[in-house]
Image (cartoon, rainbow, N blue to C red; front, side, top):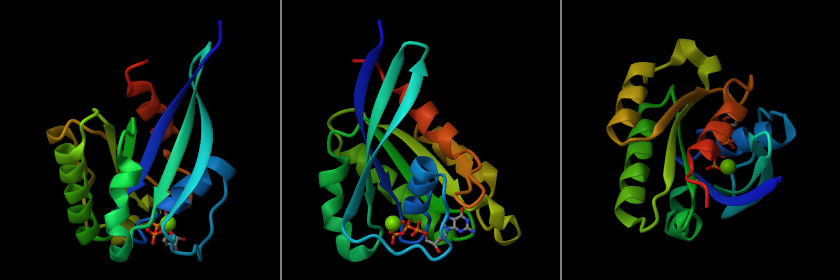
Length: 171
Ligand code: GTP
Ligand code: MG
């Protein structure tokens, strides 16, 4: 008989890497070139099929990447089943920031949050400074899933949430 589970998901990462754009692509299948920087955090839900008879309701917190909001983050990642840690493949510094978020998650988290590391903006491949291999290698070291996405084209966006949801041990 059909089952529904609810999972708390959080997006983390430096400002302007495209967290909100990924969420907008996922939930509305839209992209805005002039997206506004998030204030505090935004909340959305999305249903994802786990198999023929079960659905995960993702309760997604899209956090603000600007430094001034950093102290709020623990509220959003606490007890999260899934964390999507995003960097911009054209900004090396945002990759370092993603590594720092993963370090913080692994230090602070009492529950075992499944992590996906995500290199966004693959449509800007000509400006790439972080290679696919670098991202994949680091994800492997910290036991995270790895995806490269484009919120602009939609590449890998729904796959990322579906695969992360499927990785979570069922309650
Ligand atoms: P904060 O809310 O400040 O933490 O930023 P954010 O991570 O939510 O970034 P946001 O989604 O607002 O995107 C920042 C800028 O990058 C916007 O101008 C987006 O249009 C652009 N952007 C996001 N994703 C992509 C992408 O995949 N490709 C390209 N070319 N631009 C993108
Ligand atoms: Mg945002």
